Length: 621
Image 1 (cartoon, rainbow, N blue to C red):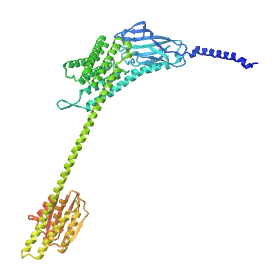
Image 2 (image 1 turned 135 degrees about the horizontal axis):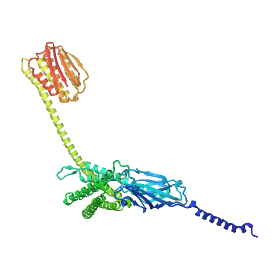
Image 3 (image 1 turned 45 degrees about the horizontal axis):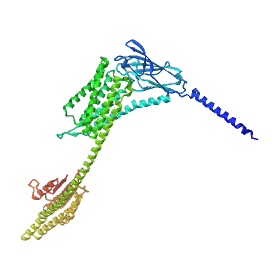
Image 4 (image 1 turned 45 degrees about the vertical axis):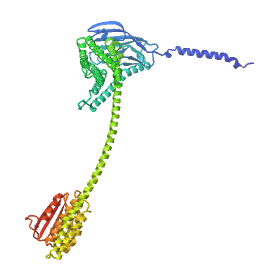
């Protein structure tokens, strides 16, 4: 007998499978499980109000106001309908790639978004940036009415593109991609152009060239590249200024003038790069481009105020075709003759010219495609080309500068070695000259001092009238002079204290033997660096001459030697109480020698004498 459980297993499994299948079908068919898809809305009921006349019609978006009402301003109301089934629980969104100039968005009678003044024309324009409108799920019904009210200005590219309606999770990424492409990327292009322009302007200012005559002049090619990028950055920046600072059409002339000036500078830059600046034909072509660059912004008020829309289109067409023709000619020449940098520039200019031709068609002949302009993206290629060229030029100049620096370093090292050798030779010669001069000075001092005294002693010995004591005095003085000359060889520079100490050491015994009491009042004196060995010898002989006069002629009982600091120098005084001399008479040879030696070392010497007091003062400055 089989168990009961085994007999009931088959029906139970079948029932379970049927239940699961039924639940799956219910879930698949449940309204909550249905995933709503975004919808592109392009069918609209339009009501236009132009100069007091109202007209209604069915239209298919995109809607370009200038195509329908050329050179006229007015208002447009567009009604679009869409169904929602089932009603969503999550937020929805509306993505509008292009709408303007001023607008309002209404959903089922509720205002969702407004930008701009809806009553006054030629004010702020909001047609350049894609728009996103958030929609609460509470506002949605099964059959929805979406209304857009537009304020349309003449010749300002008013209108509206098809719009996308759907769940926020699906519509918002579409808007973010469009915003990234049309706004963020355009801002990056403007910033890059600004940076490249500033860099080229700096190169133009700090990196001048050399004219054929040798004069230094700044290179126009850098200035033209800088102006081309700066003008284009200005043109892009002006496009996204919604709240215009001045009235239309004067504000509209600024981006047009900036774009025209940028294109003109770009062509003039290419002419300079190719070396064609001196060709007569291209001079006329350059003048023609300058004329078109001036005519382009001036045609805008003519199109708005005088309703001469065809004149504006004609000027723009001539400008684009002229630039395209030059781009083709420049590219053809660059392929055969130009360097790599010139070929890159030619390619960038050709792509910009083709993008300009495309945008001319889009903006002036098919305004319904305004969101797909190319020139703002193509301009990036010219800026990047300039960056590559400037970078290559900078690397090349840096390499040349490094090579020049290495060569200059080598030359400097060679010259430095030669100068060191020359200095060594000069130093050897100078030392030899110093030794020769020193030997000559010693010989002169010995000749004038020791030699003279020895000659006197010899004459005294030959004379029968001179006593032995006189001969001994002469020989002692000669010996003192010799010793002082030897002492002077070892004196440190500027040390007057050591010099006076040596003189005291050598002459004090003679003073004592002569009955002269010495009073020593010498302070600690500073070193005078300017007093070299030769100057100290002069000073030594001045002091010695004064002491010698005291020993030989003064008949003094006391001698006082004073030395102290006076200002930045030294004051030295020798005072005795001898018989003195008449200072009004012409000075003798010894005193004249003292004055000459004082003059040689830049010092002053003064003599003051009367019976009982004689003073010799030496002032060293």
